[in-house]
Image (cartoon, rainbow, N blue to C red; front, side, top):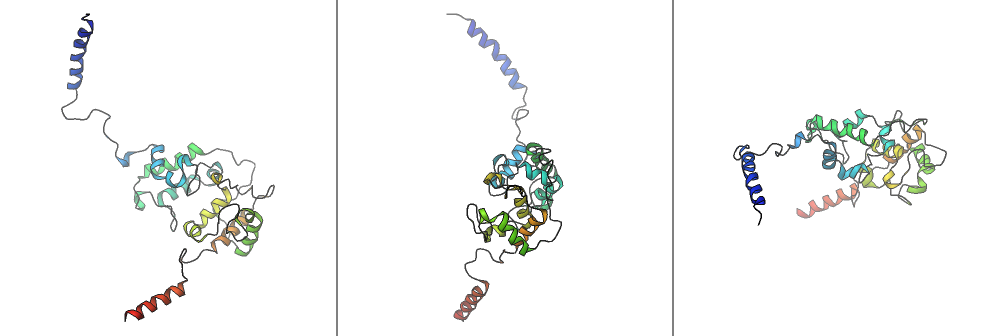
Length: 250
């Protein structure tokens, strides 16, 4: 039997012992310490932990719009994106993530998310040669005109009253309660590629929506919001039931 393997083992053992002795007793090895949550600055991690539940894995869309939509990223500017991530959108399901607004993320982490969305999924020049509408409305919308525009551009998929047909019910009480006017405008302009909904150029072939038509459609949809969405009784009926209940207790 050869003694070489045994000699090799004895030669390696002192090196292993010396290596172990180089680390102070009870101290973690260098690089083994976990990173504190407020020190994470990797876009993929921050997006997965804070954004993917609503905007989908890799920004492909989910309960909310797809952030990996080049048309959307060509319409919105980075300052607006930063503001939404940091401060949320009041009255909607979009929360504030910045610590200064009650969230858990530092200013640096907000910057990583906002800039990372553009650098990863934006395509410069994608709207060159077009006349895109503005991200935010520049004029006041007219609901009556908006109903006509909705019939022209949207009714074929969403139904004449927005109750749904080939596509979802866009005038649904719960949906309108969870989306802001800006959110509606964004969807009309950029579409929902994850749901195969076209952007403002594709509803009627060869006839893109004008900026004012988009503003008017949003005004019409906003006018259909109800004060208490999802309630089984009207406000007056509910008040009457409350009155009757108090009367019975006396």
